[in-house]
Image (cartoon, rainbow, N blue to C red; front, side, top):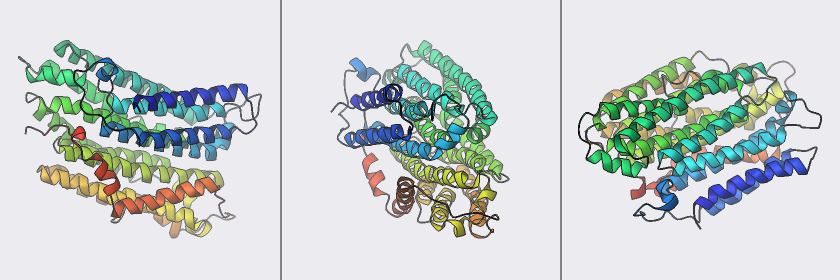
Length: 493
């Protein structure tokens, strides 16, 4: 089947959910989330039937904009899995949404809250295949505009509105940088297709300053999407104020899409010998700033969503180490595996946060006091997520960091390697604060055992098991990406 049918099917599912919600009113809007999850699950199964085609030359039709190589197919599946889990989270979170949205009908506004992530998923899937700046921009705006709405969805919650305004202003600013950067690159090369730009750069004559200027503007925009310092100003407040399922979606989906676009764009510019060295140096500087800021800022946090916001910045730093450690195919595989592991441990963390917050009324670390006694299964799931985020052996997070540091060592990036190891030690401090609260602190007076819905319980169990399975046996992911389609280009340094 044609790979572009995957995105078309996802858009049709989103339209169906909106029509179903409009013409078939129901007091139980959760059915929309379950329909969406089942529909996306069917698309996920179909995606395994899509084969990465051989290189298409000459580029004609939609192939000028769209590529379905192994990297793209993997990230489409990544977006589908993420959105399915987000919809399950949204069902758990629906009472909070209803609390801040008043309507004339029961559960008013929930239908759109369940449908919008499906359209966001389509944008993420298009971003995974985008090989032209036009499609990159359009798909990025589809994702970003959806997030503008979702972040501020609980409109009678002042924190959510504040988060939405901050995200809107800084997101618009990053869009301006992206468009301006694309304009400079187009002015120099006369092309928007990444492959054709690469051909032009091989024969570029004259000063490279305009090209570097355009590339810096594009990197600033992508730095906003991946939450790299110093473009991370929106992250803490937006993560804390947004509805928790949307925070998880931002942390995983937006970051993954940003990195896949970064990988494709860097493939072009690192291949140009005139600018490759400067670009790798810029990536190294971004990695250092992001690692140091993210880990140091996370240490004093007492709100778990805010802690995970700064943690998200820190993990962007580890991924940037892989980017800065040469642009070889191994670095791409490292980035993909790290993001896959990050998906598991982050979604698991936020799913547990939603369940605990529904029971205890908050998402501060103090609300997790005594969780090991109140709900041993939830506590163990959170323990697995925190240990993996910290990088404890036999978890997927440890193997991801091992691949990152191995890539840095092979490329003799010893400064990045040293800073990465030191910041991992800092991460142990703030992640284990959560573990201490669950197992060492006493529960609050009157705290009751926590009930978990069957589907949520199954999702938590699957995510927990995968964290340990992929930490010991990572081949299911690594073997799928060892293909010439995922090669960036080796650094000329």
